[in-house]
Image 1 (cartoon, rainbow, N blue to C red):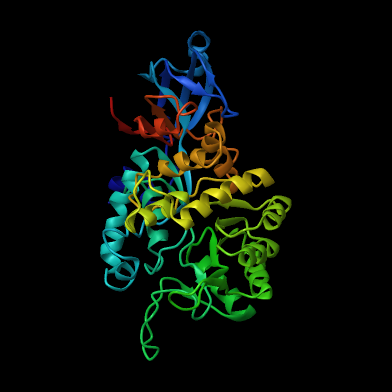
Image 2: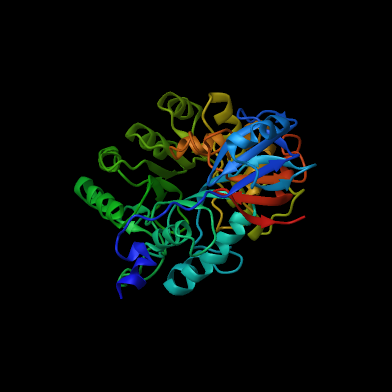
Length: 429
């Protein structure tokens, strides 16, 4: 038996010979500069293993080829294409599917955990093939800790998908989340974890971190009854305790907030990002700027909900869509960091680029909007030294496009090749 085991040294815990790193040499593309505001002409990329080793003129790399060991590298000609970093969406729900296919209540109450998890697998692949190589997954919406399993399956290579930062179950106050509107005698399952009081929210954070959460998500406001307007749901003391507990565990906090008071309380408590933020006043936005809190406006989901309600392009915008777009303009004027967070799952997975298009339509320049989905988003997940830029030492998450996204953000839909961790995961010519 022993000779057989020696063929597989990991079975005995013995040291293994390192596998040779696969190398790629990418040539011919216009390469997005690390600042994200211009194209570098004539540059080639040497990719070794999962990272970019060099970005330099091709003849320079070839001259140093012996030292760099590029003779055996696979050469990929990207002539005529535009090479950008892998895109990042900071507000996604892979365990949901579009609400025009099934209402949110039905997904939470009627669809099995197994079905929802299986459906998330092709959703993850569609997202990756659309050029989004990293997601922050902000809540399973009743699907327990399935996002942790999906994250780990992707990281292990069991299924294809983007790198995930997961939040497991959002934290909500009693009587302030759905499904709602049922006879109060019945204890209806919720799409999140209910917690109340300082001790209760601390306990919820601890449970989620132990289960595998990378982020904590809290609903700082919500409607108390069907048809009513949203109001703040957690006291400042509860929010402060929740954020403190998360920070003790090394986890940042994202806050759903749509009212001015809800946003202000979350910002004062120390959250890292505000999700939606529709009702934030200029004064509160200035506070966000001062505290370094970023905004994910989720414009694409707001637009999708409007479409499900009958809105057609060219018609007057529904009030909530108009408010969301106006928020982006106010936030920009206040100097708030705006990041790409689409709330995909409300609409179809793989359509994440719609958020970037709407950011431009709402007042960001194409450069600012692309940064929102690359370097800005990377910094918000604490990976600014390895994601969101094309530079030596960064992960080789790359997307080759047929058209220039600095001129027109819809070019982000013209994906030809996607690289994730130095591997070709999609090639479409």
